[in-house]
Amino acid sequence: MDSARRRLWQGLTLAIAAALAVSPAAAQSPDAYTPAPANLAARKWFQDAKFGIFLHWGLYSELGGTGSSGGAEWIMQDNKIPAAKYERLAKFFYPQKFDADAWVRSFKDAGARYIVITSKHHDGFAMFDSKVSPYNVVQATPFKRDPIGELAAACRRQGVKLFFYYSQLDWHHPDYFPRGRTGHSAGRPEAGDWDKYLDYQDAQLRELLTQYGPIGGIWFDGWWDQEKTPLRDRWRLERTYRLIHQLQPGALIVNNHHHAPFAGEDYQTFERDLPGENKTGFSGTATIGRLPLETAETMNGSWGFNLTDDQYKSPKTLVQTLVGAAGRNANFLLNTGPMPNGEIQPENLATFRTIGDWLKVNGVSIYGTRGGPLSPGEWGVTTQKGKTVYVHLLRAHDGRIVLPLQAPVAAARLLDGGARIAVARRGDGVEITGLPPLGDSWDQVIELTLR
Image (cartoon, rainbow, N blue to C red; front, side, top):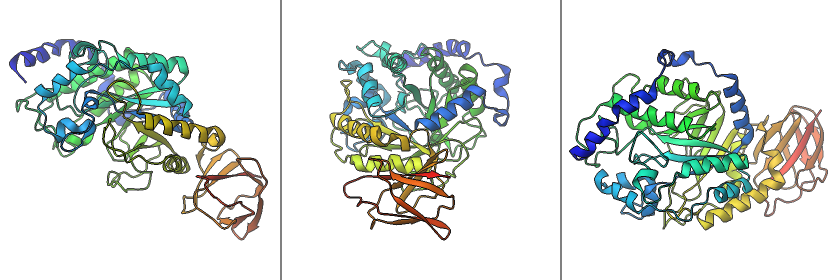
């Protein structure tokens, strides 16, 4: 970063400090955090919502993940692009097809109840109108519009909650120093003031929490970049979390740090794994806490738009992942990377429509439920709402299944069509017989009414 740009950043310091104005209460231990009634109500709403859409969209979308490593949103890091050259992407960013209402309508029709969008990713570029940084979509691009603001307004109009992803990691800011695990090829001077960077971060969070009305919450990522830095409370989480809860008590905080929840967080997310699994290696230390849960997953192999990644998961796989998450008492956050022109990838829109059609028939067994009385098995999972248990059969069977359900069952029927199914007590469990073949069904749902 040249001296002129460094002076510009330094000139923003006073404005940032004034914007923060955190009260002395913000310095209290995070152990003192007691969720406000609005927060507890939001947690319940979140658990009832069950299905959300994740959006990774930024300057990196212009490159389409087609660099030497195909890094999508990581392309600045993976292709060792200096920050000064990466900045040029802002001059070309003009998503003329962006239509916030069309986006929200598509996601709502898919059955999603909330949206999480990248307000700032690791590249440091703000996809919102930030007064504390000129490196943002309104000031630095010919687009000159605030897509975050437009999306927030569209969500309010259509009754969908909006969450903001915010990267704690920043490959662009000069005061993100010392470097963590990444960002060593950005060409920044090996100097900086870490506390100034955290002030900058909190000032941008204040903007997100005060400029766009009530929001669902903040979805943090990047904490892991400094995980091995030998400084206590490197991220000053208690101050940042308290700032968020003071500004919007009902806003939920989640941090994708791959650990059990830290004090002050409101739900726990799992990256590309169902709770209790560790297929990706991200969840090796992530014991399941007592907070609401979420699984975040991609449609193909990429989070951001990738022009050549055609390894799309089938609608069947994604629906079964949604069901598997619900059976483990978790939400399903399904990602799509919008294209640089502002449109959603057509392949993804087709999949969303298919998921929405499935939820129109089977959504009663997902929305508002909690993980059922039986542990997930090879056969499937259960969900529950009051005295109704939904048995989700995800594998072929021979027309009968025995489940270790001890509660007495008054009646059983197929959810799709309502046909009655025979159920009888067998030892410590129940036997369900007379089931039609699973056939092409992705999930055969049996509704059990408990006595």
